[in-house]
Structure formats: structure tokens, C-alpha cells
Figure 1 (cartoon, rainbow, N blue to C red):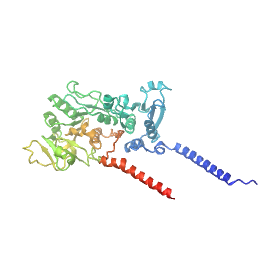
Figure 2 (figure 1 turned 60 degrees about the horizontal axis):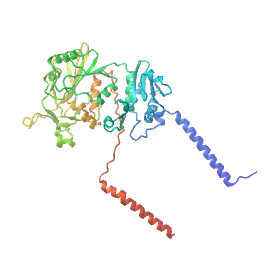
Figure 3 (figure 1 turned 30 degrees about the vertical axis):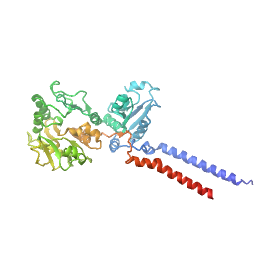
Length: 474
């Protein structure tokens, strides 16, 4: 019998091990290929780019209607991050039917869904509703999965990525096409009101609500239209006329829904509206000696503070982070015009709240708990009327919400919006993931620069020299 040499046996053994390893790798790949993307593709982006929020998990777990999600884009030009997120997202529910179509190979697809390339079509055959999610904000759309800084492009022609909003945009789209809700939100104009920020209108639309194309002018439009499900008045700078006041009072008495955000207390007819429903806006600027932000105490005093969030109100019960208010106005609860009106506050000061009117009257302020946000409700023949009053425009001021995104300001306002729809609407707004470059700032850069430029190279050089000398002596 022929004997194999030792080298031959070792070679055969190594070949066998290599063959087994290859087989194991192939089998593992086949197994992993069958796993859903949510398991097989863990998020290693570092910024949580592909994380799925609890809100999305809940929406998709409740999904009982088939939803088509169609990625339309040239195969080699679709952003890989968008494709990866869609793979992971659509694996979370058997009711999500995902496909990709290249418009170059199938040009009729653009006409079929009335869209353009680099978009995601979300449609539900059962409800007959469809919406488009844009892949990139560079196309001129602020509501997109990847958004860009418009100022950077306008002034320097630089495409600077700002955020990745795949989770928020897709969940809002799925919620919209499967929802039977058809509610329209109007904003009031004609009194120097402040426009709602783009981020806020986006959050409202993500809740499956429709923002009216044009703001409402009571006098020019002849009153409040029949399709107005909620009217928002944001920071009016001038007062209502007597006729406009009558229109708003009649709207509420007929079961209307109104949110009023006040910038100033010196508007008599607006004050009449709130007092009719049991809320009297007080003169002066509101501060809080207990809950002020100490970091700004030297410049803003007690007037920049965190309100107390009610744990019993549906609007704030689930909010776990502070809000930030500046230059708020205090309200006190008074007897409403009718016994059928009830008032529930959701934002207040602590017991150390006080009003600054002027130096003379505020030298010894009367400390009290002041209301900042409250909802007055009344049962009418046409349903429950609600008037929500927020006596601080800073709650939704873009200056604060942009500079301090971790504050709960917008979440509180959105919960207030949703509360006007008797549970038919849910707040599905999900924060986007920042794509901005985060710089690491080193304290004492001169010292650390000397360490890395001189000290460490010198240590390595000396260590190498010592090692070389020791080797020569052997």
C-alpha cells in the first residue's frame, strides 16, 4: 500500500479544513439571506441611522391592511442609505409589500404613479389613498428622507446634508394611506399672526392631518369654512374686530376646535374670548423663581424657565423631558360664561411663579401658581367644543425649537393638536436623525498638540533606538 508523505498528509488535511470552512460560510450566508433585514442588517452607522422607533413598531404591529411601498429610482443612483433603510423597514410587517422599479427600464411607471425618479410611492388599495415620499430634499422638497440645508446651497452652492428622516416619513406615509381620517387644519391670518414653522406643519401632516393651502381671513373669507376641523391662531400681534370675535364665539358654541397661542396680553377681544371660557390672561411677563434655567440667569433672569407638566392631562402625561419658555404670560382660572364649560390646565409655573409688570409694582411680587397652557371644553349639540390656550408663543418659536431640539416644546403642542380629535388622530411624529458633522473640541489644544507632535514621536524614537542597541549586543 502506498504511503503518503508527511507533507502530503498535511496538505490534504489543510485542504479538507478549507473545504469545510467554505461550506460553513456558504451555509451561514444562505441562512442569513433568509432572515429579515431587521435582524440580518444591524445598524452599525454610529448615529442610529437605521434605528426603528417605538412609534413605528407600534404602528406596524397594528397594521392589518396591505400597503405597497415602491422605490422608484435608477438602480445605480438611488442612495444606498435609503435602500438599506427600506429593506429593514419593510421587513417589519407582512402587510408591507416592497418593490423597486427602475424608471429607465420601465418609463411608464412615472406616469402611472404621477411621480418622478428618486421617490418612494406608498399606497393602499383598500382605502384608495396614495402619497409620495421624496428620497432627497435636493429636489426642492423639505419633507424628504434625506434633507439638505437650503441656505448652504443658496449662498455657497454646497449640498450640506442635514438629517435622515426615513423612519418619520415612511411611518407618517403608512399611517396616512391606511387612515380613514379626513381632517383639515386652518391657520388664522389678518392680525399679524406668526406663520407656523415648516417643522411644525410637517409634524401636523405626519399625523394624517391636512394643512389648508391658504390661511383663513375671517372677514375676507366670510367666516370659518365647513371643512375646518381645527383652527390655529399663532401669536397674533393685533386684536380681533367685534365681528371676528362673534364669529369665533359662535364657532366654539357650535362645537368648534380652536388653539390660541398668545404673544401679548394687550388684546382685549382675544382676552374676552379666553375669559368667556374661564381663562384670564394677566398683564406682565411671567417668571419662575424655582424652575428657571440657571445657565441664563445672568441675562434672562427668572423669565427663561421650564413649566410644570401636568401628570393627569393627556397632553403632557407621557412627556418625560422639560420644555423651555421665555417671556410667557400668566393666566388665572376664572368663572366661565356658562356652567357647562370645564377647564383643565396642562402647563403651569411652580408656586414660585410671579409676574413682572414694572419695577415699581414688581419690587415685591405676589408669588403664585400661574397657568400657561389649558384646555376649556363644553358639550354642545354638535359635539365637544374645545379651546386650548397657550400663553407663551415661545413654546413653538422656531428660535427655541431649533436651538434646543431635545426640549419637549413641539411634542407638547402636537399632543395638544391631537387632543382635539377624540382619539381619531395619533401623534406619529418621529424625530429625524442628524447628519451634521459633529466636531470634537479638545480642551487645552496647545498642550495636546505638543504631546502628539513632539512627545509621542520622541518616545517612539527613543524606544526604537534602545531596542536596536539591545539587539546588537546579542
